Length: 409
Image 1 (cartoon, helix red, strand yellow):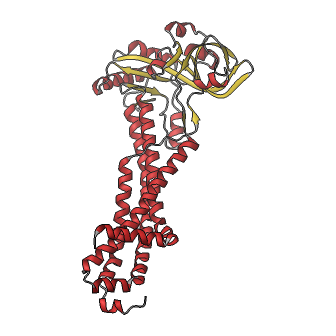
Image 2 (spheres, rainbow, N blue to C red):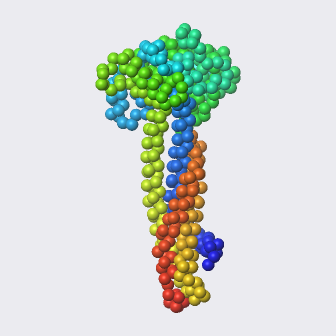
Image 3 (cartoon, rainbow, N blue to C red):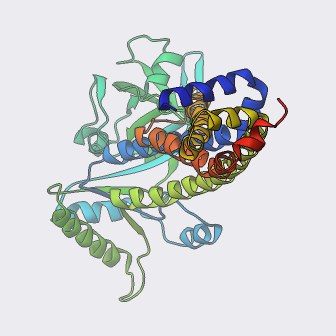
C-alpha cells in the first residue's frame, strides 16, 4: 500500500466517524494544547522580563533593603528587620564609589493625582534623583527630564505617564500644566513614552518628581533603592563596581566583619536566574499534565484502533488474499494511528495558541509563540500515535487471512 493511500484511508475513517474521532483525539488535543499554551505564555513572560531587566542595562545593579522578589513569609519578616537605606547612604555611595559611573536613587508610593475636576487614584508616585529617568532608559517624548538643579532645590516639577495625559488632561499638551500630587502642586515638564499593559495593569499610570521634593511630603526615613551603573558594560567592571559599592555600604551601615549584608545587591543576572527557576516550575507542571493527557489519549487511540481492527477484519482478509504482506497491514494501521494523533496534535497546537492569545487579550499577560514548541508538540503527538498503535497494528497484521475472510461484515 502506498503511503498517501494509507493517510487517505486514515482521514476518511476520521471523517466517517466524527464524534468517535473527537472523543478519540480529546486526550491528545488537551495534552498538546496545555503545553503550547503554557510554553507560549512563559516564553512571552521571558521576553517581557528580559526587556524590562535590559532597560537598565547589563552594567546596572541595585542596592535595596530587600530583594524585589521574595519567595516566603519567613524571608519577608527577616528582611523587614533590616535598617532602611536612607538618603545619606545614597550620598555616601555617590561621593565615594570610584568604579560607579552613575548613581541614582528612587522611592515609590501610590497616591491621588488631581487636575482641575479630574482625578486619578492608585497612581504610582516616584521620587527620583535627576539621573534616574536616564538610567531607566525612559524616553521623554515631550518636554524634558529632570536636571541637577531640580534635585538640589527640590523643584516642584513632574514627569508623567501617558495615562495621566489621556485621562486627566484629555489628551491636551501637558507641558506647563499644574497637577496636584497628594495635594501638593507640581508643574509638568515632561511626558514619558507609552509602555502599555502587563497582566492587565497599565504601566503608564505614574508620576515622577524630584526625590528631594518627594521627601518633603512623604518623609526622609522611608527606605529607598539605589541604582548604580558601572563604568563599562563588562563582567569585570560590573564586579568591580558592585564589590566596591557593597563594601562602602557595609562600612556606612556598620555591618560587622563576617556578618551578612544588611541590604540586598541585585544585578540583571539575579533577576533572570530567579525568573528562569520560577518559569521552569510552570513548564514542569505543564509537561506533567500534558504527559498524563497524552497517555490517556494514547490509550484511547489504541482502544479505537482495536475496534477498527475488529470492524475491518474481513477487509484485512481480502487484502491479504490479494497479496498484501504482513508489513503492509502493519504499516497501514500504524500510519492511521499516527495520522489520528497528528490531527489531534494540530488541533491542540491551534487551541493552545488560541488560549494563550485569549489570556493576553483579557489579562494583558505577554505571550510569544515558540516555533520549537509547535514542532515538539506535533512530534510528541505523532510518537504517541505510533507507540500506542503498535499493538493494534500487530494484531491486524497477524490475522489469518482465511479466518479473516470468514468474518461477518
